[in-house]
Length: 549
Ligand code: ADP
Ligand code: MG
Image 1 (tube, rainbow, N blue to C red):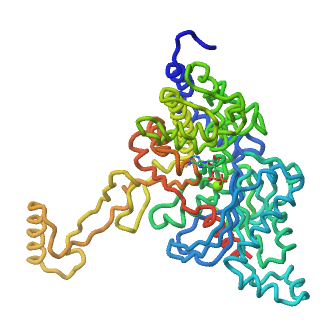
Image 2: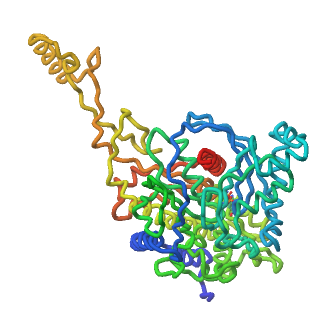
């Protein structure tokens, strides 16, 4: 309702307040998140899927080999070949294209997967043409045999960022579509099989060796790159959608029966946290959230995702702008303006607006005019920027809830890790954690030393301690392994966390507010972008699958 005399800035402050998600909210949500994580571990059909990935170990950086990777995200399709060099490094060739919107609603799954296969063909023609040509030069009868015997084929890891139930490393059936997709024909079908069928139609020397959720891929890629320091706990995505996968103890994964002997002790679990609290018992629910959900393809589900991720933040902002616009006497919104059209604001606009520090907010005004056909003056733009900051801040704080819950549940903050290395990198941008060493007297390595020798060494050690100088010939340094506090490593990926200004800093503010993390715990959490995560992660799982056969 328009209140007489209220300016657009005052109204924007009011709306921004609706997006406040305070300390108590964060605390309560974190507790509820842990509860729903546990429910998902115990039974099928819980709010959070907690889907076993069949990946039972994380890489240590020594893995080697050339693999193909395909990443079907919510917005982009990426195809790459990854050469794992075995020293935590890799080289990567890649291509990327937007997924055509008509394929998101294709009549049959085959249409979507045929598109993927043609893109793989183009990629091979561009980057691995010799392998493709030599395969196609083979006589037909050998090719036919090869459909059974795929020797020499490139092994492909398929990163698929939708919910699927994994049956083995290379088999998984689609549970439901999320984000902007809806192809009912694909539900329940084996995703690897669908892709393999289309690849074989094009006679490509490629075997779909593994199916991997993008969060699992991110976790593995981060583990590969950050190995030698600490084992990565969590891979999290903040892109078109949001989700996370973490390392869980098998003993906690009660719903899964394992027949392997020896039974693995750990498994990566895909939380499917986008559906956390679909019941809305702790999540905020503003009128703008309600509108976004009602207009969405799948109302009532992915409620956590709908408050955090790239597909929806632009929409939340659009409804919030519509709520303040009547309070402006200067903003001109044409009748045909795209502001009235769903999905007309891309979430990248939030990053642009949050980063606009120009005195006249020219970046915001320019983008409003160009993409939405809205003429805004400085005050109008300032009001919109307030909305942006409130929506971005709430998204990051909710992201913090998910991270806090996984970290607390893992118990890693109360652990210290025995280490053989003398030091390890400190959390990025954080003050260095000083390792503790004990200085053993040199004599301990020379048992045959006489009394006078020992006496002089004692005098020398006393003198050095007193002067505070290091010995010219260093004493033997032994690491005290028991009291090194664990660094909790987290790999992240997705355009939102990569580009929205200070998204990580805002997450950290929320982490500090949570009991069980606090100021000290937050310092020990290291968050790093898993660069090219989906490609490297898929390559690593393809390698695992290859080794198991
Ligand atoms: P995918 O989800 O397909 O793997 P991305 O991680 O690139 O792809 O995420 C795409 C999502 O990120 C889209 O919803 C898009 O609106 C949003 N996005 C793209 N650029 C930015 C940006 N600069 N800042 C914030 N969000 C962005
Ligand atoms: Mg992605």
